[in-house]
Image (tube, rainbow, N blue to C red; front, side):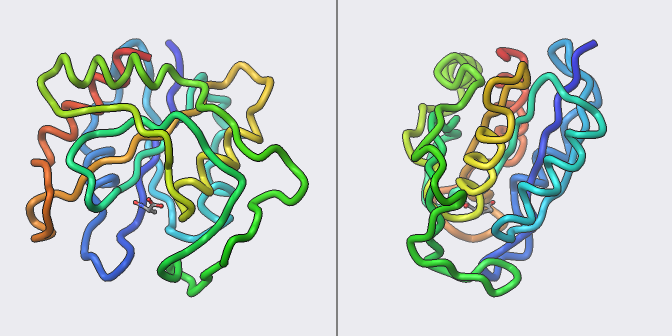
Length: 193
Ligand code: PCA
């Protein structure tokens, strides 16, 4: 059986929960021909990606899929690209707030995701959940993780992808999506890998 390392984040920005970890933790142990290893990662520039790479070095996954909250989005959005830029409009959970800094100085400006982002969006849509491809993972910790992993696994057989998800209703912000729909969306995405 193939191995999938799937991650969700700690809460940040004053929220009590992060729906990305809430959804990831509710996924089954096996799905779509993959055995899942779930990892909760900190909302800290640099450290989040380091923790993912640390676990990946031990389990050698066939694919790494990271999930994050994108407040304001009304759909589940597989990301197409990670960029070599750090910019925080709020501090991370350790107080770092880089302003227009490269993630890896001198390295490529961007990498395309190596999972089939469009196919995943179509599979989520076919499960009757709003979804579209996103062309920007932002410049905060989610993009930091996506870019760093794409750089790390560049040229290897390990696929790397990222999916942003909306708020859940418990967070009292709009737009939001029921957690069970987000779990179903992630299920459809993994089954399409
Ligand atoms: N969303 C943030 C970081 C953690 C999360 O869940 C982002 O979009 O960068």
